[in-house]
Length: 223
Image 1 (cartoon, rainbow, N blue to C red):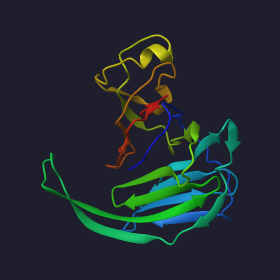
Image 2 (cartoon, rainbow, N blue to C red):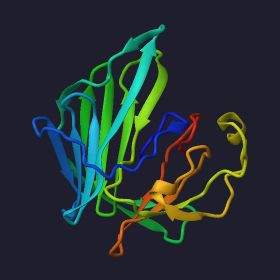
Image 3 (spheres, rainbow, N blue to C red):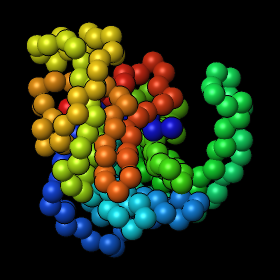
Image 4 (cartoon, rainbow, N blue to C red):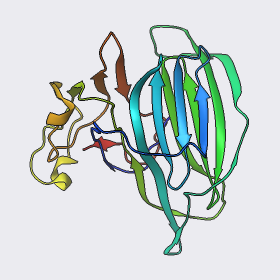
């Protein structure tokens, strides 16, 4: 479900917690209550993710910068938050190892300034979000911010692109490579990577960064 609108994405390790107030926090839990997604909107939009009372991702920035007719539009102000609702349904799978897939999650929508919405879903085994426009007028997506500020220097399996040189040259790739096993702090900032990426958070907990529902839009290249 998570829809990303920009190829260059910041992928960082934050060992030190970021200070924040709890004045404007929106918390959404998974149906089983173990996974907790918290959105903070005191100033800019930020999120964090806990699983089974363990902080997996510390406060990390998200946001979308858009413009209309060359004029920047503010999309960081939260105007309204909707009540959380539960969806529990089954989806028919066409090409998959199962004929049916369980689709069970808690969801809410946040109304942002600039005729934008932020939809959030929290499953028992993952969290997702998507920015979407509610305007019928043409807009230009100038930038999107999404940081993954992990709570510790975890192990990571990264599929770097095979192309070398500038970022522009690295975009020409086949999305095929073996995974490099290293620490988050050893990620190569000069090389693009593609998804999915796997992080080992210890004690049997692994996190996967992925995206879906991309159509006529660039995918994410973590750097």
